[in-house]
Image (tube, one colour):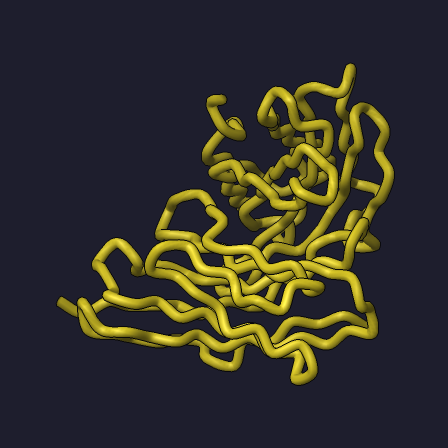
Length: 113
Length: 115
C-alpha cells in the first residue's frame, strides 16, 4: 500500500526563523510526483510546492524549498524567513503518475511573533 | 479564473436526512475530485470524474453516496440517509490533466454536521 507519513503532528517556529517539516512515503513506483499543500484555518487548501520524481534538482518557490531524497523516500519542506501568515496545516502528498493523490496526516505549524 | 467553488459552506442536518453538495470547478479543468477530510487528518479520496465520466470510486464511498457531473461541468455529491459518521469536511478539487498540469486546485469545502 502506498502511504505518506508525517511524523511531526505539530511544529512551531519563531517569526523570521527557518523550519523544516518532514515527510516520508512508501512506494514501488518510479514515476511519481510529490507535493506540499498548505491549509490555513477555515480556508482552502493551496499548493505550496511540487516535485517531479524524475528531476534530481530540488524544487524551490520563493521562501519554500524541498529536500528530495529519492532513495530514502524522503521529501521535507523548508520554510525560510517564516512569517505569521505561514501558520497552517501542511500536508505532504504523493501521486503516482496517472493515479490518485495520497495525503499524509498533516503537520500543524505555529509561527510565534 | 474564479477558482473552485463549493456550496454550501456549512450544512447541519438531522440523522436520516438527505443532503446534496455542489462543486463548480475551474472552467477549463476536465478532472474533478471529491475528498473527505475529518479533523486532524489529510483528505481521503472519494471519487473522480474525467469530463462527465465517473472513472473511479473509493471503497469509502458506500451506496448511500452518489456523485454526478452532468455535461462535464459542475458536480454534485449526494448523501442519502445521513449518519453521524458522515460528519466531515467534503472537499472538491479540479485539475486540467496532462503531465505538466498534475496539481489539484481545491475549493473551500462543505462542512457537514449530522446531529
